[in-house]
Image 1: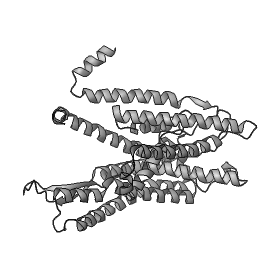
Image 2 (image 1 turned 45 degrees about the vertical axis):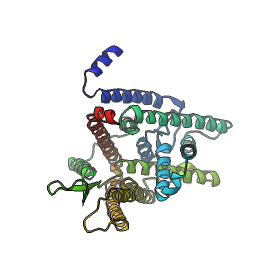
Image 3 (image 1 turned 135 degrees about the vertical axis):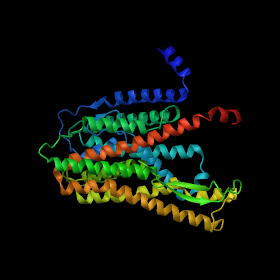
Length: 407
């Protein structure tokens, strides 16, 4: 079998791409097996069921519907990477002074801290009070944190040898959540209402695709390539953060929610089931999530565009924008444009994702259908990002032999 695969790949134009796809499929098989290894029986336990928590964790490759090896998913890892990169963006000079070992230690400590918080919150949903609660919580934390670290390592291996890093894990998790979730169809709804739901879903999907594909162009003069026919321009996507902003906002929201609920349970007499303010069925919880989504989308877009770095590149190469003086004025001009694009991206993402949650308050009977629509939108968004990665890999693969010859 191995020889047949090698013969097939040897005579294929994109054999490196197919090898990466096969490696990603192997990672997916490991993920499916690990997500079905239960470390705590939850068959007879009536836990607090929060639909949004299930959706949010699924968007990070996790699963809160049961306690399995990969229940925490990639949430602690991606959240810690965002926090560290945002801090580095604010103080880039201090980051250059750090060694690789120091940066890795900070990353791992932050990942461990976030994993402990999420793991404790997950286990507190299922472990009942009793004589062995402390031992069960400790052992359960040890296993779910180890599973999260293993999943992080698998995502890292997929980034180096597979396709799109952690994205395939997220896609598989969302598909699993949709397939095994409680999406009972409301048969008594009129056909007109179903038509409106499907139409709104299509409109949101089309709008997301347009925002994802559209770009803002800034013309500039390249001193090494001056042409009246072909103009040089700086192309910035209208949504630089992509699906990452949605995924990270859900992860950070769940972590903040876990910390607040953990402290309330530990220092008050309230039970976990009685805490509703941070749920997405409460107006306060929805408003907090939408604000968090907007802020993260804005910051992540600025981080991706990085106008300061682009201004430094203009200064080194001698390229300039017509009507804008080189140096500080160019940096201010690019920063102003980047902030406008980031603000537009944050507003659009907040509206597209936030409005459906407010609709669940107005029409609670449609909450399951709306949550399902949000999952489908997320699945479309992440799939677009994966297709972009594959397309870019195929593009650069054409010039690989040329680049290997000179580099």
